[in-house]
Amino acid sequence: MHRMIERARQQEGFTLIELMIVIVILGVLAGIVLFAVGGITDRGTSAACKTDVSTIETGVEAYFAKTGNYPPNLVPALTDPAGGTQFLKWDSSFTGTVSASDGGTDGMTRQGQGYVIAYQGAPGGEVWVAPAGTPDATTVCP
Image (cartoon, rainbow, N blue to C red; front, side):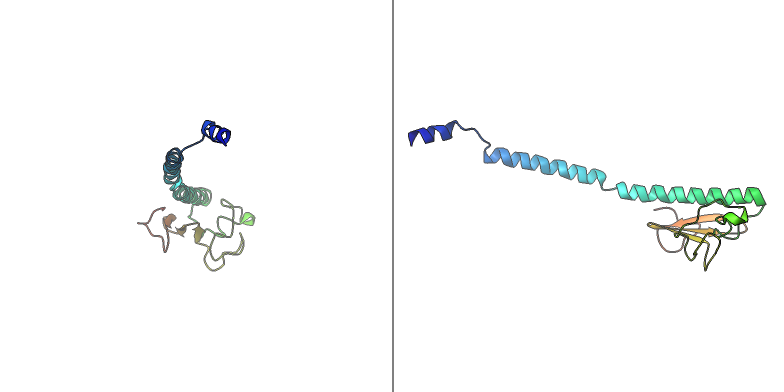
């Protein structure tokens, strides 16, 4: 019995206080990491919105440079490969449209993830964006 007690005293381990300190340190580090990466999605949405707006503005200006007029709509004016003025690639985010050559019911807006881009045709070919709702000249990317 005496040998077992001596052997138990020689074995080293962590005390409860040491374990608690390590747990607190890990908790603080986890909190810092969560705080640091919390805004990454918001910055990604904002960057995607700005990129989409820039791409559409570039397509509108390229159409203007080629034809001398601003396009009447985004779809099909800027997306139809058969029309000879394909400056944008069509996808299902162009609301109210079903293909690159069919303007559908709208052809003037694009729905992004967390934002809406609207094209205002003649006279100035303006591209507007809003986080939600209806974009106008006063709204900006989220």
